[in-house]
Image (cartoon, rainbow, N blue to C red; front, side, top):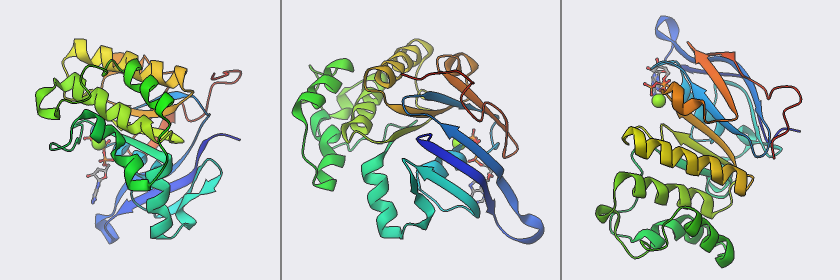
Length: 232
Ligand SMILES: Nc1ncnc2c1ncn2[C@@H]1O[C@H](COP(=O)(O)OP(=O)(O)OP(=O)(O)O)[C@@H](O)[C@H]1O
Ligand SMILES: [Mg+2]
């Protein structure tokens, strides 16, 4: 059973003749440990797709299963808890809390959830992302690439079922983008972490295990793992 499954999903905005079919009957599956890129032009439905996978918004029709959970049958309260525990988000704009230092930012989702801290795992993540010398720094004293690495560490901290990243390198220069990309790929391999990442950039997409292409709210290729592909 795939870790992530979307079935005949539709997301329409507005009503009547002005309806925008942001997602128009989308089905896809992702195996545990896969690193998948979603590629498409502006307005094709990429962010909408990611929001559906992460339970940030509800579908008009269709289903999303994460780790066997049918997420849209959950109450709003349950869906909030699901997001906090099972989904790590990484955004283009990093979204760090400016008054908290690096370590406090990384620990924030764990503390919100009252979860136990796995110190050994956390140290591994911090080291893997090269942040060990920065844990007491404030975000404003870090470069963009460093801030994004903190956001990735924060997303990994709760050991989520999936990490969803919307243009994670959108604000970075090409060299830093490559570095962040390589780190994301390493995290997916090292921690068998499932990652779904949106990008406009074809070179960046090529780093992923698989590319899902979306046009006008429909998937045109890459909706399921290649036959025989065995993600680690
Ligand atoms: N809240 C909303 N209300 C109405 N229409 C929306 C809303 N969110 C998205 N849309 C529309 O749905 C379509 C898909 O938008 P989406 O944000 O998913 O595109 P995208 O592929 O992420 O684009 P970009 O690359 O520019 O971020 C667009 O036509 C957009 O205008
Ligand atoms: Mg978008």
